[in-house]
Image (cartoon, rainbow, N blue to C red; front, side, top):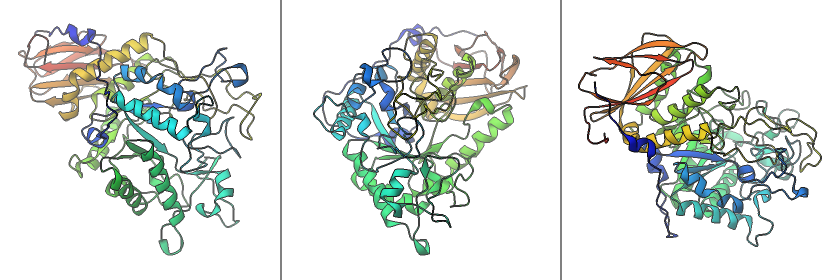
Length: 516
């Protein structure tokens, strides 16, 4: 069997066209449904923060600067250089200060639906923070980067005092803390006789107005399932009257349980998709907890059964390393980090990467849970979720230095540009393996195939045999990602995988000067 030599794959630099025109046509919904969106998630208030003394916390009294929309513009070229095409902004709305977590309050403790956080304003810029946000999005569009914004699911304690009729109350007339989210309170969805709370509906519409006025291309709805079909149908229809291609993605997965029980029902994925959402979160979640190929296959099958009902009109977004999850490198696992990278790139989904992921940031902060010298809330401790991106304080920006992780990330993104059509348009099939700990799958488009093999055992190496239908000695193959050089025989691949390793190959019947 011959091996294709594709030096261009490893040496090409990802290039993007910059649009000098200020005109922008939103195509995000189409791109998402085609499984071609690549999301890069940022927290604006830390994205380009300037931590001069290296203690990981921003202390403005010493001349350090928090992240703002204005200094975020400085890093748009960096985002573009990564090869992503969509920026996902973690919540940019005002945050609560009472009963808060952290010294600047959780991004998800929403204190206003239509006011952008003053923390994101550049004090030295004469423009309003809304104008600065619009400038940021306009500059992103010039670089062919789409932008979505996150709407929190619940309100801050401060908002319960200002607008009490937005919130549900218990028998003691206290507002309700949902799940264990101690710094937020649960919205009141219905009035009497199961009629939607009109004040809450109008509040969400005002968020849509704000998002569209600053030029956003879509919305990610936090814990979308705690609001029903009829609520989202009205909100999504309202948004699409102004922009028919305005994208909505629901934070919900098939593995989730009702987080607001007994205070309300939890809408199903199908109900949310019927209401107009374009997609939902992959059920694979933290792949580190998946131990067998049977479990892996079951989660994929559950997602695919839902998608099959919509015949290409809905799609998935990756959930392997979000801001809610511990960094893949937190326990020094490069192989697990590579699993997250390559599953994002080789499954038929829209890829999701968190700021700091390309450089392998562990999200360890020197100030974790220490007493703060200054605070903007009633919490004087630097509250954190260990190993996760900080969303509670004015902290350092995620690491971005060029290291082995960044080099591996860029190799993956070059592969994405090279083989993206196979991934987005290919027919998916799982492959038979001889090990309960090894899962393999294939995407086939025309005569080209991408084969991915995952060792789910994080502690032990594995020798695996993978059956690939119609694979024969006339097929050319390229080893994209593997520590071992496999033996490729008729209808099978025989390879050794390190603990937690993922391997990726391309097979083709063509060999045209390095092009599949």
